[in-house]
Image 1: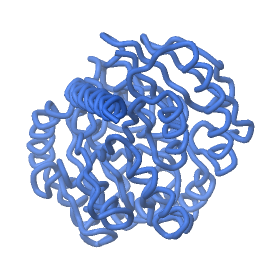
Image 2: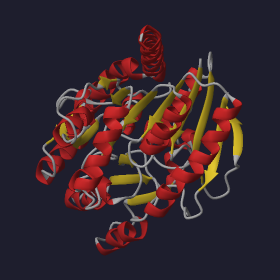
Image 3: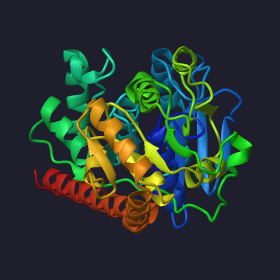
Length: 398
């Protein structure tokens, strides 16, 4: 099978949606031919072969950061991607297109699929449908809702990675649309070592919390920093992995609260260092306002950590309070504080939850996710072929 992925973000650009696309693409490339059209970020090559995947990066001109896109760069991706896509369609015969993010990538996948008369599977990731932290969130505006509704209906299949994402499709766009539920997965972590605490100015008896993600308003890391201050415990440290437009503001808040010795901003790190840090920590914490799925929670589980987070998003598909950690009512900061104190003061509970997570995460490795995508691709290809044959027979009949 020859598969074309369209995604405006693909590592090292962007966040979880790009990461999962890369992992699916590389898993499928073991036995299939896989191409990707994505944005060209600063210092990235226009074309590269990455773990069996041909990655084509088209110029967007306005993107200056790897961690976060902006509206001009997202809009520029569409014409650049279309031009590159036309060339690829001329050179290759694709069986299916998989478009990731209805905003902004949706129109590109739809255009190319229509031009080549091949099926288009549209994968929605959550924030492209609904982001409560942004006034420009698509669900808030009639024109974008209408445009998205058309793209969802035209796709040969729509994939949501969580019940929450599918619920948002039905609540805001089309209550009758049939959606495929394919939970995301993560690559099985390599046998990396545990980071040395001394290298990060941490003591063996410190309680180390960690959070991973882009420093954007939806992640609400400012709330997390204030909760750390309210713990009033100098032996509690928070490692913040990730970069983004709120970096300077978050560091200012940290300084204002007198927490510069306890909050450690590490910026972007590579996969090895990320997992070494996760393995070094005692618990994973997040005050994110919404996650379409929550890949980082699976990474925490795979790193033998309990999780403390809110209950709004796709993570409720696989996290249960009192089992995997604590899953708390959105923005109940007192409950979050109490949960952190419970895990701080009861190491046996931390360890039992961590061991449970290590077992539970086995069902969420990337090979399971890729197999379900491949089965869906085969099904829509067959449906598309049958539709073509039926239309041909009807035309010959008349």
